[in-house]
Amino acid sequence: MRDVEAVARYVRHHYRHFNAAALIDAADGYIRHLESNGRMFLTMAGAMSTAELGLSLAEMIRRNKVHAITCTGANLEEDLFNLVAHDHYVRIPRYRDLTPADEEELLSRHLNRVTDTCIPEEEAIRRLEKAILEEWTAADRNGERCFPHEFMYRVIRSGKLRQYCQIDPKDSWLVAACEADLPIIVPGWEDSTLGNIYTGHCISGDVRNVHTVRTGIEYMMMLADWYKATCRDHSIGFFQIGGGIAGDFPICVVPMLEQDLRIHDIPRWGYFCQISDSTTSFGSYSGAVPNEKITWGKLSRDTPSYIIESDATIVAPLIFACVLAPDVR
Image 1 (cartoon, helix red, strand yellow):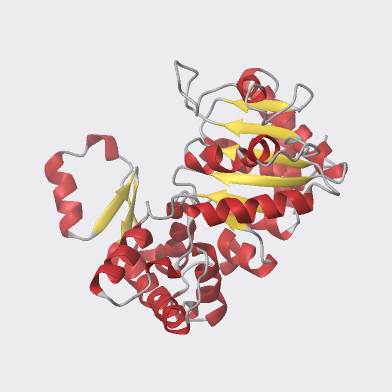
Image 2 (cartoon, one colour):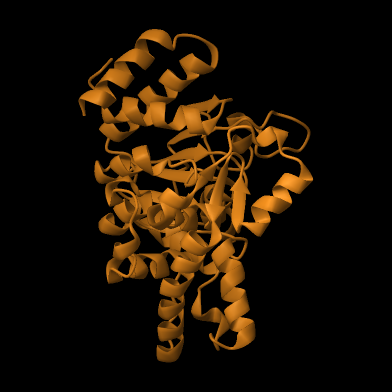
């Protein structure tokens, strides 16, 4: 905790202008939102799990600073890839200098590159595949249907991965979410390594009912139920890391409830922050400023809104440090 306080103190002393000041403003808004009995919904795009965001996000979950998450299928699985194969990852600091021949050589070694970090196929992907396939086929035999994150929770709770752990489980955000039984929404899960693997097992006949893994439409229905239940007693904030489907999908639950279901007492998101390096341009929703979301019925003119145009791998842990040490002002 002293380390977090030291980081928060440093940030508050040095981060005074431009994107740095926006970071502080967003962190203070996050703190005020929680202190006003608010709840925070976090969305995660990019490859934040491979960037080991769990080092800070897991503690945010344990300290009740995050109450639900939407993430891509890649972020869902890559947190567990890192858990079971961390020592086999290969970092390539000069990745910008790689030639196509260098990339082919990495492929021949079964190393899948994400920017400067290579995920080892055998130790990460295939280890998790074996464990989760057992859960898929068991559910298929029993006529059960579960969401992607629920299958991951089953794998964690089964202890099947315990023998392979190569980092402290307290640094896994998914383990922390599992322990808290946190709601997780994973739109477009099919666009992930495990989504591709699941498809293969459906084609081969290992899984007979393709709907054993539940869909994105059902995820929106689940999110609608969560939002309606939570907003009765709490304002709900929206903390967005990156752009894409992880942010676009869940923020729409509010106008869907209000405009499509015609529920007229649904409050809009009560806080909004986006960390993104996507610049504002013609038709770029990932780079759209918060005001544009007002016209879609997602935010109101009074919603505290912040945008930090920077790299989330740098910015998010600093905001988390400030939120975890709210008394450092």
